[in-house]
Amino acid sequence: MNNFRPLILIVNDDGIDAPGIHHLAECVRTMGEVYIVAPLTPQSGQSAAMTVASPLRITEKENNIDGVRVFTVNGTPVDCVKMAIHAIVPRRPAVVFAGINHGSNSGVNITYSGTMGATIEGCIEGIPSVGFSVMDNSLGADLSLSIGFVAYIATEVISKGLPNGICLNVNIPACVIPKGIRVCRAVHGKWVDGYMRFIDPNGKPFYWLTGKFENFEPEATDTDEYWLQRNYISIVPVKCDLSAKSLIKTLAQRFDTN
Image 1 (cartoon, rainbow, N blue to C red):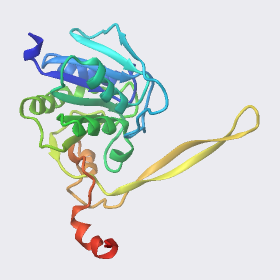
Image 2: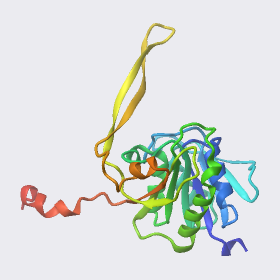
Image 3: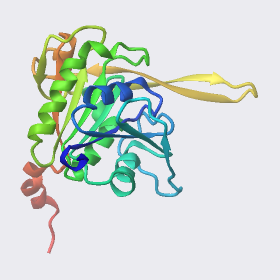
Image 4: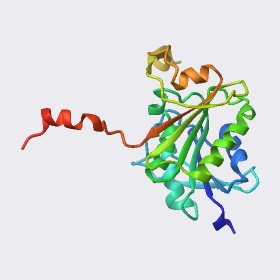
């Protein structure tokens, strides 16, 4: 009978022990046959990285969610998607859901995020894929406040799919019941990176990444940051194809040779 139920693949970048992935599984476990395939250890910031010089190992765990099979992979979020499709799940997933990530993936974070790396990998495979994140880095974040919205988005994607080559980046405001959902674009900005310098017990320096996000368009009203600040869930459609097609003819005039 499971063959008549959609197979839902859930991955993350915070690792198998993060509450977010288990909460996401609880949200969707009645919607299909659910498999969790998560990194053995936290993999935040891994983007689209995949393991190329080390063996990958799969371990099935005793799950604590009724009806959900749980696996770990000693690799990145992208490794988890690839290994799930090629070595774990019994048939092609109907959807890939990544998250719920503990921390923002709005704006330029799409580029760095392991959550969105996994989401984009699912999209490259031609599978409708969604990355979910909550704007709270704490593993103790109250994820129950948005459960209805997460379930609604998941149901829509399972039942109606997504356009080819498009996945969704969903960010959820922290500590509030969201007012609603807005589909919008990613804000233009960047992280102003800094590194704190410390001295280890042997007297040698080491550095720890810090930083602050700089919003280059704080007055814009059509961005994810704008709506998140107003306690709405933001949905940014993301393309897998990064080609700047509008510039091909212009740049061809400069660079094409016979």
